[in-house]
Structures are given as C-alpha cells and as structure tokens.
Image (cartoon, rainbow, N blue to C red; front, side, top):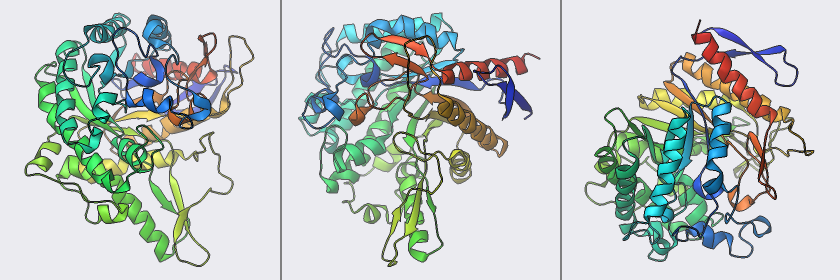
Length: 462
C-alpha cells in the first residue's frame, strides 16, 4: 500500500494522509427499510413490530415513528442519483419482510416485490451495486403475535421469505446479507426491551439468538439456489470490543467476558459451537439446541459484515467488587454518546481475521451521530464527522496492511433517518434531511467521502 493525499472539503487544500486501498475495494453507504422507506401502509405492506412499537406511547423519543421518515419509497430515484453523484460503488439496503409478506407467511404481496425490483434496477442503471440485507429488525407483527423469535417456527418462516426475495432479485443482486446485528434483536429487543418488540424476558435471550442463527443457516441454501454463481452471501454482526482502564483482576475478567460475548455469534457461525460459559456470563437460559442445528448454523458463508462504532472501557469500582463501563476522561464522544476510537476498528478487523481465518470481511456500518446545524442553504459543515470517517477509513486500511481481508467499507448512513428508539433526534447521515420539506443537503462529510473515493479511483487509473 502507498500513501495518498486527500483534500479537506472546506479548504480544497491537501491536509491529511490516508492509506490507499485495492483497486476493487467497494465504497458504499447503508440504510435500512424501516428507517428510510416510509409508505408504511401503502401498496399492501403489513405492519411490522416497529410500526407497533413506535406507535406505543413512551417507546420512542417524542413519539416519532417510521410512517413517513425520509420517504425513500417514493424518492428512491433522487436518492440513488445522490449516491451516484458521490461516486458510491454500492448501496446497502434492507428488504421489509412485511412489505413482501404482510402476514409474514402465506400470500406474497407482489407490489412489495415490485418496489425492490424498481430499486435494484435503478441502482444498476446508475452503476451502483445493490447490496441486500434480508432482515434489519422489522419482523412482521403477525409473526410476533405467534411467538416471534422465541418460536422456532419463525426461523423456518424466515427461510421461506428469504427464498421468495432471492427468486425475484437473485438474477441482479450479487451481494446478500441474511441478518443485520442479531445481537440487537436478542439483547435490545427481547432482553431489555429498548427496541421492538419491547419484550423484557431475559431468560429467552439465548433462545432468540439461536433461532436467528438457525434462520440464517436454513436460508443459505435456499438463497444460493436462485442467485448468480459468483454472488456472495454473508451475515452482518455488530461488535463493541471491551478494554480495561486498569489491570485489576476483576477488570481483566470483565474484558475477557466481553470477548466471549463478541464470540456469541461468530463461534457458532464459524466453529459450530457456542463459547464455553457464554450463557452463564449472560445470565440467560441456554437455548434448546436440536440435533443438526449447529451444523446448519455453521454452513459456510462468503463474507462477514462488521458493524463497529465504538468500544467499551471497564474500570474496577473503588471497593473492587465489580468492573463497570466508564467514560474515558478527555475522549471525544458522539451524540449517542459513544467514544470516538478508530484504532478499535483496526484491532477488531485484525482479531477477526486471526481468530477465524475468514475469506472476506466488509465494514458494513461505521459512522457517527453529531448535532448538525443547518442554516437553510446548500451546505452543512460537520467537521467532527469528517474526522471520524477519515480516521476510521484509515484504520480500515491499516487492518488491510496487517493482513485482514477487508473488501469494502459502508458509511452509516447515506442519509439522516429514523434512528430507532431515538426517533429523529440523532443524525448519522452524510446527507442531511430536513424532515418537514424532505429536502436533501450534502454535508461536508458527503463531499469528503466523494473526494476520497475519487482519489482512490484516480490512484488506480495511473
């Protein structure tokens, strides 16, 4: 790898250094169906758990919902033009299960599939690679009412759904992800209830995670039967690695526990087993594993998607009885608030490579929420987000230099949108959205990212 200058979008001057990336490296951005589509009750779409959850008083900040959000269901041509203008090589979007199967099973809603046909065809027409995530948390409400992910039958319903989508889009989509962040579904959705469906039943967390993993494994052969021979299938996991602020035994033990939790999904996927002691660490019931489950779950995949935003730092309490997460003195925090720690991404990617010898890694989400201030014009200055992206992209390049097979990087997110239980109070987008008018405005981070992509292409063109 060589070193390449890049340009500050505000000054136009070359100010920093970034490592260069392979010529075929994928530069993209990501969104998720419930966060951007809107059109919640149009064209036959059924309700999802997020429709129900966000309409429940007290669950989402200020009662915000995804009923309209940024209206990408109607505005996707404009948004794809913006993606093309930034030079994106790929756009990662998710499919709404309840838009395709309003009841989760049974009759297919052809109008829903037609929408994804149009989306994929428009992306391809503009030279942007479609990257499909089949499940980004929006379970059809009808399936939740039948037990949701606690019910093993949901894993089989998911495999049916995945095959329906693959039958329709498999001739054109070359990169597939079965799930996005199953940890969030199990932990936040069913354990503490912060996310939909708002379930608070800690003993079932291990079972929910197991059924999510089982659904992934069941779907793999059914997807492969309908996609291009060179298409890739993987899964996206989130990681928030733990670090110690001291060397006390209780802190070292807590960091080791955090690493076991990092292996909650990777060990079953790549080794066919759960980490020893995991369910005791989590204080949840072990899942009901049936014969053949682990072989199904560990069916080989082509890549692992990695979502990373921050790290956790643990410090022993004064009395030494426990070790707890702390805010790092002097560190920069985002609006979430999450510590900005780019080297954590480098270290994570290298660890995954060394631990599992994976064929390919993609950074499928990385980005930051900051308090953006728009004054009504055609510009929005977000220097903290520019610095965040610059430093994390550089960390990704350093991981490649250390041998990690990273093949792409996706900013979270392309546009401001509905940020789950935070509603519209947190903005991750590199494109600003004025929600009342639906006006899109490029932030400096979008201009910086476009310039970075352009320079990478220029480097490889000689």
